[in-house]
Amino acid sequence: MPRQAVHPRTAATVYLILGVCALVVGVGLAVWPQPLAASGTQIADGKVVELRGNDQVGWMPVIEFSEPGGAMVRWSGGGQHKPAAYQVGAHVPMVYVTANPTVIAIAGFWAVYLPAAVAFALGVIFSAFGWFGRRATAFARAA
Image 1: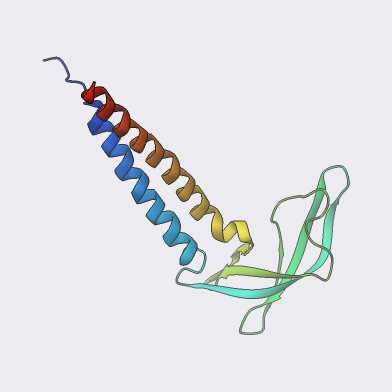
Image 2 (image 1 turned 60 degrees about the vertical axis):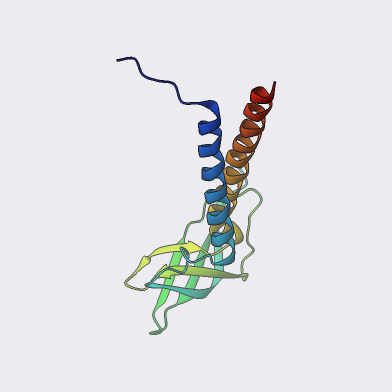
């Protein structure tokens, strides 16, 4: 049996529904950025104690922060940047898993809001395809 093609208006409606759902998820992640502060994580104030690297490959911060129990954690990561993204002595918000303080990330703007921005952008694209697809099929039916 030959496969029946999906009607363009139906496809446009699916795109519109997916787009609106992605917009809602994007707004929700922007208003409540919970994945970063999920259960079992802690936010600490870190301090850049040194920069590793050189002007050829870039600079990576070495950050120290203390856990609530008083133990000092030293972390190096976050990628290499040219010029250095942080200066020695700068305070940096850090998020880490309390059960395993080796799982660490810098709690910067993009770490918090990148998932929301991606979901919102996909929502705009899918909604636009759905909206214009529905309008095009409505005009085609009217003609």
